[in-house]
Image (cartoon, rainbow, N blue to C red; front, side, top):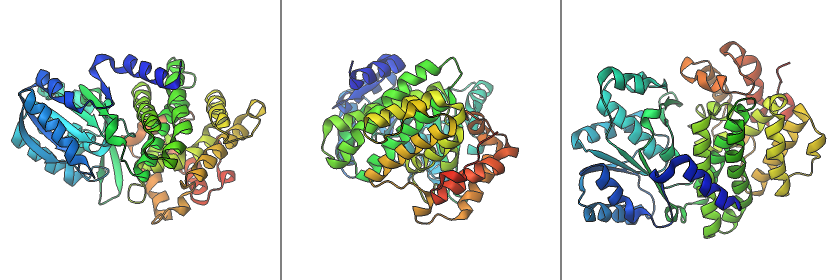
Length: 423
């Protein structure tokens, strides 16, 4: 079975018939919406060519007898709080019985969070953390309008997941809602929308998908879900490692574009089985200088070395994928612990170098040691405790400075030797 066939089979296993994905599926959105309600609010992002795709959606709604109650402009990248509040007010005024989001992760995350605030009230801080939306729904006996989440970028897989990332611009800190209640009931992804994606977005999204799979795989070691995660994660990472260079070389390569769409969706599958950890945790404090996927990709080689003594099995699997792609000549079978982690991290650096991706924080415009201080402070915040606990070598808040500090300094300087392993 090819990696493409395996990926499609895994996605059907994950979402069944609820997931509409492939080339040219936007014309079917109206039928999906008509099953869910009669009045729709469309929350949409705007990018080059987006108007044409939005017209297909609106024509499909009209043809299926669904009234467009409101067309709401989506948020800026990383969904700032101010944009979320605006979208919430417009959504409340429209009072739709079905919500449609059309955009990348930020737009879909905004729709998820706006539904929460519109239905349950309170402040967004009331819902950061795990399961707090479900608790509030039970308390107030409320439900949400069905959400049709239409993804436009191969990356976050927000259309498939229980996560909503919201950013406080004033502090430069991102926080997270994690709740099954916000998983979109009707996900969709038309691969054609990604064909014209710029190189920067393509890179960021692909590495976001890898980060989802990689971090969940690392955190699954020794747990009952490991075998399931291994199949999902290895398929995702293999597709990206093989096909991302092809897309960078030829952005019109439709087969390679499909590979990235399938891969990043599998990243979404992975984060519904287990949680992310180090790379994602640090990325939340770098939102003013790096996109999310870029931050995760930059940090994960360094966390790989830190986690290495506890994750030899997945490291051999991932190392083989990079080896088959000609990215390392290391004798992976005869390396152990930290040395194995260093070999895999260096293979990740090799891929980054070949496609013009940064490998250390010191290369990033605007980065300073203040970002390190911010990340260390955030890691001690109880609202982000889940990321510390999901690490294959779990850290407590009291251990953050001693162990995470050197990881961040290593990432700043590109110096793997600076990383301190837990004895």
